[in-house]
Amino acid sequence: ADDGIDVRGGALTVSGSQIYSNTDNGIELTETSSNTTIKSSKIGTNAANALGKGNADGIYYDANAEFDLDGAGGVGLVIGGALEADRNYIVGNGYGVYLGDGMFDNGSITGTATISNNYFSIASDGTTTIANSSQAIMVEDGPGVSVATIDIIDNLFGSSFLGSIKILDAGVATITGNSFGLDAVGGDIISSGDAINVDGAVVNIGTEDVADGNTIKNH
Image 1 (cartoon, rainbow, N blue to C red):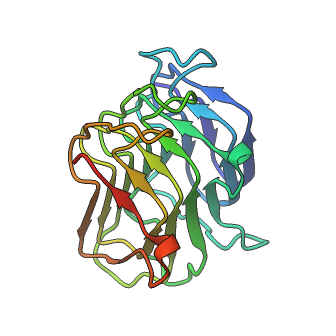
Image 2 (spheres, rainbow, N blue to C red):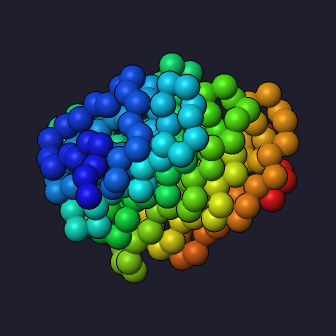
C-alpha cells in the first residue's frame, strides 16, 4: 500500500493540494520530522467534493517515529492555520488526523501540535457531509510523562462515525472555539459518537473567556 505523501525526515510544507484515493494514508509522517505545516488542502476528496475518494487515514503519524515538535524554528506540527485560506478540508478518510503512540511521551519534546481552522467531515461548500469513518482527530499515547501540548482551535466538525475528538493518555490539550454538529451556515448535522472523549489526558475545554467556548450540538 502507498501513501499520498510519505515524510521520512526534515521540514515539510504541504499547501494547495488535493490528496485522495490513496490506498494507504493521505500524508504519513515517519522517522524524525520537524517544522511540518499542512494547509489549504483537501484531504480525502477532490476539487468537486466527490464522495468515495478517501484515504485509509487522512494525516497519520507513524507510531514508530520520533517527531521533533520543536524543530529548528519551533514551528512544530501545524494543521491548518489562523486564516480562512489556510483551512484544510479533511473528509472521507478513516481517521481524519491520527497522532499515535510515541509522539508525545519523549521528555525532550517541548513543542506543540496545533490543529486550527479546519473542516472535518464537511466539504468546502460548508454544508455537504463527507464523513470520516473513525474519529476526526485521534490522539493517543502510552502512559508516561509528556511535556508536549496539543491545541485544537476554531475547527468545524461534522459527523465522523466514531466521534470528533478522542484524546487518550496524551499530552496536555486545549480545545477552544470549535463547533460540533453544525455546518458552516448553522444547519444541524446529526452526529455519531462523542464530540469530545477524554481518557487519561490533561485537557482544557474552553477558557474563562466566553469567546473561547466550544459549540456542541446534535450528539
